[in-house]
Length: 356
Image 1 (cartoon, one colour):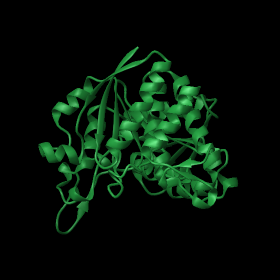
Image 2: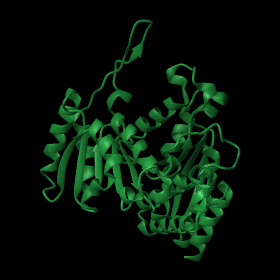
Image 3: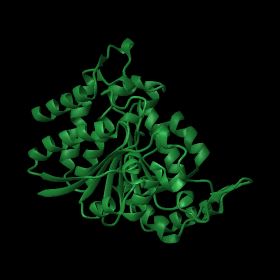
Image 4: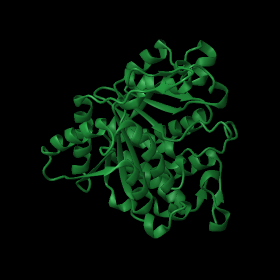
């Protein structure tokens, strides 16, 4: 099998973690007779610096011709004052919308070797295995009208029936392969958009009688994720709420550097770590590559349909962590951790994969 991969390393630590993930992808690919053809492009601030555009049509066309996209991160302080449509983050919204990537899957599984790396008590965390499905192309992020002037700012929160239906189906289908529980998170006590969301989700649930559906307001969900995360299996939620809740879930795993994501549509797919560009450590070689490597694992599972490859990557990472190797973001001297940089962590994971 051969796959065309569009690499969009982006800004900050993006190129470092994407380079690490590609090395892992190559090693795993050889084990499963999979080869890759790569194309490279610019996105975010680096694209603006060269083209005065955070995402060019040429780059987007390359993405259209790929089997999937691997993205690093975008953004940096130097671009904060650009007009909204030229900000690096605008490129993320554009590529998600253009590729029709409506289903953002963010797993938050706590490795046993990472139980002491979170601010939560180990007995609360142990056994946590959550999948957050965030609708990615609706809500405040894309609603019109939007803007601001000297006196006010405004955004439009909107959802169409088909947008809610398709992400709800994805949630129930994933839940059927797990613990058969879906918790739909909204703000239906205040927002009409959420009342509409809840109505559609309930209608879709009738097609999945074996899956238990519950509902929770987003403020309560944020509290419950840190109070008792094991109560959740699949969380289904709106775009803005998912953005917030997935970052909370990331921190209970010990670091944003540990959380991967997949953004899927009917035809295209994009994989990226949840963390940002971390410009303060860019170029120092100390970024945590695990989230991006785990994102490659998701690519094997969802785009290449080789779940065994994802399991191989996850198990290798778990073994490295069990041996107490840590990048600075998850390092604790008092726990007997061994401090390693980006390259060393990557090589340790590759060594484990090679031994499997």
